[in-house]
Image 1: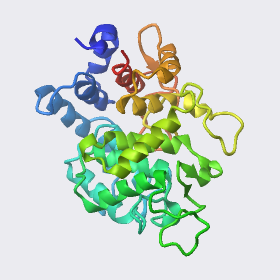
Image 2: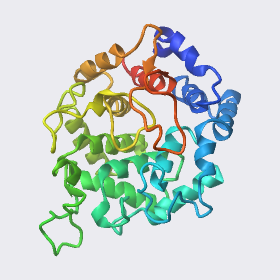
Image 3: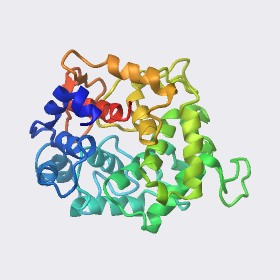
Image 4: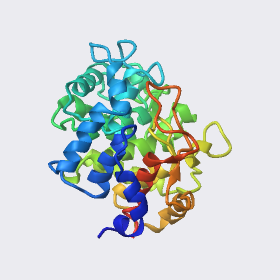
Length: 341
């Protein structure tokens, strides 16, 4: 019996209930918490339900025949109904990567949302490459089963890793260099970002490490492994519970760090930071203990966690209700706690 089945049985039972509004919770609970095989009848049924009930079919019904949402192009805008956000949300909600509509949007962003250097970009150009977006899209493609053998995907992952380590990328001031950082996006190694006044951005770091943690270890290139080491050192260099990472335009951490929600866009929270670190094997590291306590402190008397941050009203479909017990957030919490001994 796993720690989840033993210590959180009531919560687990709640997550396994059939729920036509949020069928992805049951699917992920079966596959990630109970680790049932893809060919298990319960898993097959749950996956089929994701594609016919709840938010996923609503999102897919809004898709243009060309594979995009709202308008053709790189797909970052409009927030949060544009193309790249649907890839992120579809993956997080459990969409089937073998569905033809899902495949078409994955193909679309690989063709339209990358810069000439391979990384994903807000505007399809080098100037718009930013690690939170790159990490979100790469993680989503991995979750949707997109093959690492696709050269375009390989280029995106390679750029993400090297943008962290600085390998083969000149400083922005070297204007004649064939490949350099730009002040408008990734402005330097180690997660430096224009959106954080050119300081290392922990939101970007979490998204990037989330991606690299999903790449099987035997498939990670030396650049990827080096990037993982840089990222872990950065994320554990400060207390994840305090989230007092470099703040370019503020004197204190964003409140978003401490408000758990779902699905997750470019912002992040302490819970996703722990999801990332535990998946990389740091669940027993003493530096995560305070963050684990923070997560456990949000659990109510019934063993559930509330929805504290939501994109409802800004997306194609609402997901649960802010301020109420959340199956999605509760699943996320258990998905971290399963790694804590």
